[in-house]
Length: 592
Image 1: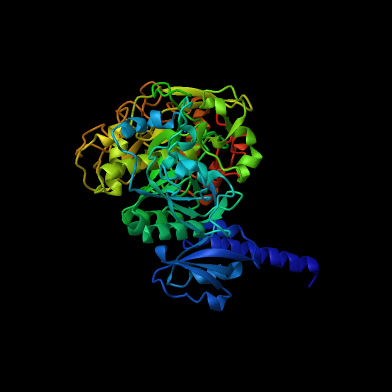
Image 2: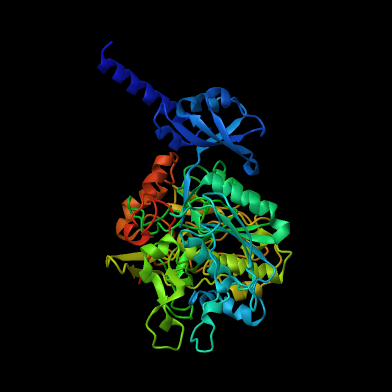
């Protein structure tokens, strides 16, 4: 047999193996892209945990157990995956995918500063920061002492719990910084977080480059659940994520987040920074990341405060990812919060600072001084990574006031009380490229509205049932969209958004009444038309509609991973700065 013939047979067998792997419903589609003969780290979910399903006999080596989701992390030969999937005790196999990281006026714009004047500061509530670590800062000490409010630290990545990247420290400051470093007598402004007396649990999963893995995040979530009683952990902040590769019912990150939610911990997740992604003419729709695509969690998009304390002039950040979610079509985000050019804690030993030292804040920004040097305490970043801890801090305040609230009650209350008055459209300009981006204010861009902490604290409406984000359903006959709600959801069932209505909500018949959660204004498509081919997409009407709602794309009957990949290829080079395309990361420069 000739060398050419052998090469042909080898190629043919490789294609057959890839097709076999890709064709199994138990195996994640992205595993079908791997070369036969190689090995890969996979998360194997078991029907009956505790069995190895024959993996060792196929050349598999167990690295560690992931009991939270009934799974284990194995190194497996790619050639063995098809046989592994045939074992009846294997539920689902996915790669151990990489995940990435995705306060000047934030407190005022979110209503948290009013809450502080009434004594609500998050004291006694534990917030788990699953990120790149938390650095030391005066703003994270108990006032008047040297005692840190970072009450526990652990690492699930490289050695040490210190923040070698700088992202986690910034996130921690937005949640719980108390402004100690910006509070001298000659200060003109003080940079406080949303819940400045809350305790922080530092669970490091991202390395010095801001990258981690699914398994690291799963282990950190498991640790948070186990430490819940010890440190009164009521909130998990996930300012990280990755591309959606399968339904949330199989996604290991989503499964772990749901476990925490059902254990009584509110999970708050960044939507992603792909709102400018128009790679297939979809205007950034259907770019929500995982685990933000899970219907349980609170998914947060980013607003711009426009450097004022007033909420009235605030606008959506054009890079904020939009729904519906790929594959499952869940209506996301749930809320939006301040996240553009956010001032919070700096970590001068992290990669972000060494790469972008110009993002340090001048002393003149908060001190009455003519000293023009840059502060060593505060740093400015943008992104849904920064909006997420605003909501996490808000949750801490709600639970401080009313500890008996369940995660579903917290989510429903925040969504109902969110501000729902927006313009129909806005235009943003990238300060680096000068390119302009047009955003529309609809359910898949702003969710239930702009978080309002003070309004949420003053709401006492009784609720029961779950607060699962509804599923959007495209109606081919009317070219409109219906919302399908879980039968046990607080907002009820049977409401329709589509033909004959600007926005019919899932609240029909529910305790809060029609229009209460999503409102009647924020979801206007264009000039009062329903969501459809002529209402949403502007100059990209035909191609955009086909990309998100059409068959074979994100919406259609062939909602494959490949279509999700097309919609999540990064077009954010000028904003992302550091990170892998398609990942949640900070927007280094923000936008005008």
